[in-house]
Image 1 (cartoon, rainbow, N blue to C red):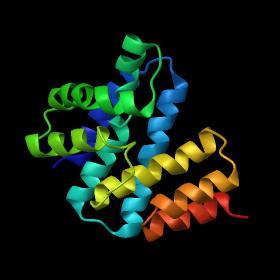
Image 2: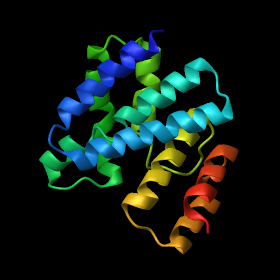
Image 3: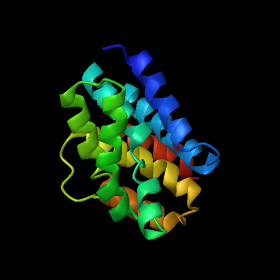
Image 4: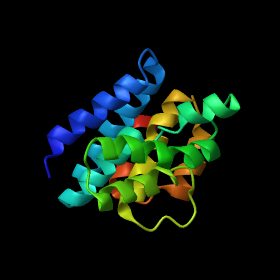
Length: 166
């Protein structure tokens, strides 16, 4: 698997998709960076790293379609439109079918927080939260509540402590 080649292709496609929308571009790049960091800290295998990083790049790809059709883009709509949009982009990047299906599953569930059992899913959710806490300016008690209910990886918890605890 040529990780760097695919990473560059997916990133370039996402940059073009969100051209002139620095908020969205910065968001997916930050989620990607934190996802990769958690993966490395957790010492995940290469396949998990691959799936997590690709998922992080495209996790919010449903926003454009949701906004176009509804005028807004809540988490439910992102999950509804995201998998189809991700599939089109990833197929255009010649990813293997198994990877595409897993990434599309994660895109379609990254705002569903109950019953997270797989490590790739857990890592993506934690990375997205770590970025959203800052971008949305959540108060400490709201952040702590989310972390206590959702975070499970030692690395996600460590990053939360480093980023947000006094």
